[in-house]
Image 1: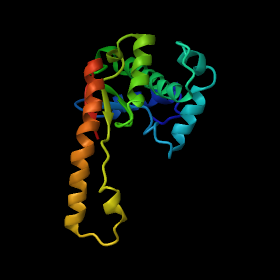
Image 2: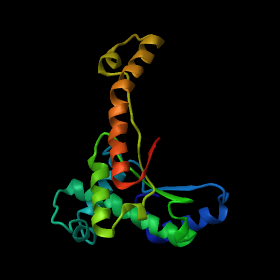
Image 3: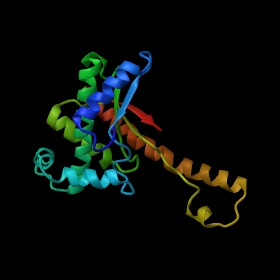
Amino acid sequence: IPHMANADYIKNLAELIKNRLNPDLNVYVEYSNEVWNWLFPQSHWALETANKEPYLSKLNYDGEINPGYLHFRFVGEKLKECSDIFADVFGKDQLNKRVRPVLAGQIVYSITYQQPLKYLSDKYGDPRNYIYAVAGAPYFNMGDARMAQTSLTVDDVIAGFNETVDQVVPVAVENLRGFALDYGLKMMCY
């Protein structure tokens, strides 16, 4: 869902998908894309929007004033809004069956999951009522030393990827798995 989409846009999109998508296919709903990634304008927009009314008083229900925490809570609020609208269009019985809202975050930065899930749990009850899965991408590279080299062979590149995959991915995936288990959600990587 685009980060600035309003309720009418989301409802129209849900209706379009319901009417046009093969009914044997599932619908995965994610609020925006990499809202945690400061290289993208949606992150800055979400931070700004979360830290002013009408969202500010709703998101800092517990007195939290950290702007970043409120930003990630905003992502949870917006995903719940998307989830509610899709459930209204598809039928509440289709939520977490055919309609699968996904909370995506930065897999190595726990706060991108912790704050939205805590917020949803505190404000609305069990996040499973709104979210199907947590998801993230366990990014990896060749490592700084190899990246700085000017002449690499194919074997060097593959060895570099293998080393960082073995070092980074298991820790990142285990972190995500922890949130999935804690909240009884599915876990997805993309």
